[in-house]
Image 1 (cartoon, one colour):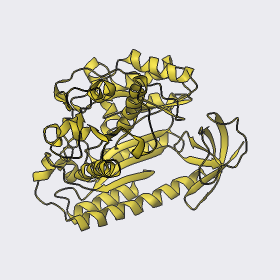
Image 2 (spheres, helix red, strand yellow; image 1 turned 180 degrees about the vertical axis):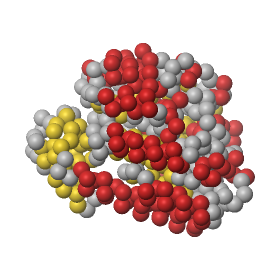
Image 3 (cartoon, helix red, strand yellow; image 1 turned 120 degrees about the horizontal axis):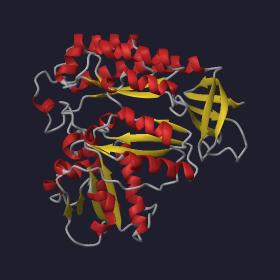
Image 4 (cartoon, one colour; image 1 turned 30 degrees about the vertical axis):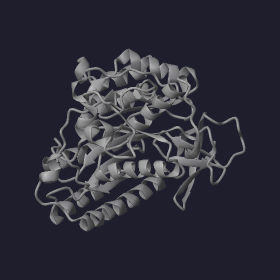
Length: 419
């Protein structure tokens, strides 16, 4: 469940189990263990995790349920009271999961807030077309809506040589693109006396990967130095994801977000000026505590005039243990949902406009290792993060970079032609 870091760590968990004679099975009735790598960003995600664990026990009463991830880290002392939880494994321990499933304690969770070092475990997974490289863990922010710093601890960076070696390994075994992931990758290097720009330069100059893509960054972490370097890069995919959360200064202050709406709107304009059709995504929370109708309307006005490509939005979910839980001015659920729908419509229009700007334009498409399961077409991702289908019977194009021109956008799908 949850973020790209969890997805990356799930792959690490699978590799660890396979090395220790565990075999993955497709049917829950055949399984000895049901392992859930949980997300705890909202109470809804907690409830979803518990639903899956109960369902596993219902389908196979003999199964051993293992709960790991962020719920396990935060709620560790309470979880074994539930009849559907058999093991509770912390975020650090899960990377060596087999060690904790061979008997011993039913609860293995270390104090993540005391951890100082990044857990450097290499991932070998070759099942995907794009490889994820986790470069950082933890977060030093204390955003009012967020509990994740308690689940992940303080920011910890992978050493540059570990990152470079991992990327070159992926390049050596055939990967054409890597994605940098972490809980807050813009904080990479703080504990090493380095900056995020330093690792970007190392990737450009010391690896032989064809393309690299950045994970989510806070607006104030994309400075002029970084942008100017990325503009000159021969490997960088012009795809940015800005963790905005609001486009209203009052709401940003109450969230403990340290930037101004006007500044990040200018920054988005600058990105659009410096790069050719860059994809600029963002996250926005609708209906945070204290957000009035006027505050929300200003956010919408700023989003509409922004140069964003796509906006991922969701209604604010009160999270127990956060500052936001006790703040005044909680917005009713129905109003939060309605506000989220308004932003989704703004996003839909912006995304459609962006795709139409790309029609007739040439792109470099990384063709995936598997065809689209519905159409049977070849499918891939452009450097600016558009998923494009190509009608071709060529099997030799899997996992290759090919020049295409985007020809059509209909019924939510983008189509292209090989050049």
